[in-house]
Length: 402
Ligand SMILES: *Cc1c(COP(=O)(O)O)cnc(C)c1O
Image (cartoon, rainbow, N blue to C red):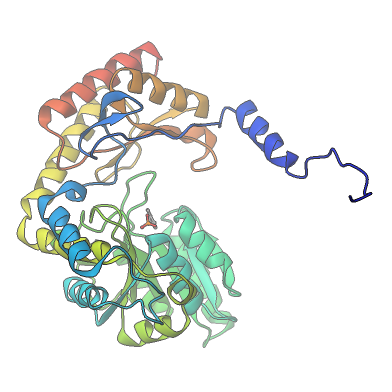
């Protein structure tokens, strides 16, 4: 037996303190559990609700063609890929998906990653080696922020969508050093506000400074541009945005991320992007379902039309009721209420009344801009959206938001 003295201190006690702090701040949340297929109506925590919280913009995650493609791939290739891409984990389906995406996006090459998150953490350190400078929008996604943190580059944050600030920042950088690599990063669609990046102006000021432009189109993939090709296509900027990050996890309905750009970028990523090198590739069913999704985008454009009709109807309804919907221009519509506690109360009451819309507060958005975020999809019927509007009106009045 050891004669060391018995210890009573729990070395993980700081976790309990952290949980207490979350509770004290009203930030403690329990995960909502979806117990059915992800449709516009779902069973969540035992209750049937209309969901306004899914990124399944086009309903593709239950589309018959995607289901069938996934099933066929499991039959033919099995459940997993067995290795990282650089060892034995590159399957013909992965290569086929990348070629298909490159054609779809009108770029030389595409490399897929396990998620949009890992696409950003993989590509940003490659585009911004030591000595480079990154200029990033203040509201860019967490995966961009983490990607930047992984670099040794200098970073400058410009106020959200402030083109004048971006221009002066770029001019200052260039005046000091004519040769430095400069990388400008923006979300294509900002996920908390639903506004679209001012990409034509961003490209113009970046061109003046010979800066590289990276746009992260996670919420624009499958939503904006012809057949959902994204913001570069939406603004007709083909050939002027160097790198596009996309996700396969939102409108595409499956899982994954990708980097679309020049062939040279793909080659360097293959050799150096850490999530690509050190994390196992997608199961065959994922790649096969993504391939089917691109086919659906190309052959069923009516899904995107319905998405936008629904978005316009719902947004106009919220505005007519007097809600503050900020600067939204896409199917993401925030309902800004002010304090975080009120946003969570609003969300909880909506849920009790059969509508699932997530409350979002600090640190995701500033405390005084806390909100309930809504996302409509192509799958919502008019009747479901009108039911949601009635519930928003009733609960909004009850909580004196309108
Ligand atoms: C959702 C999102 C991601 C992450 O994509 P996943 O495929 O879910 O990992 C990256 N960037 C932005 C802007 C996003 O909204």
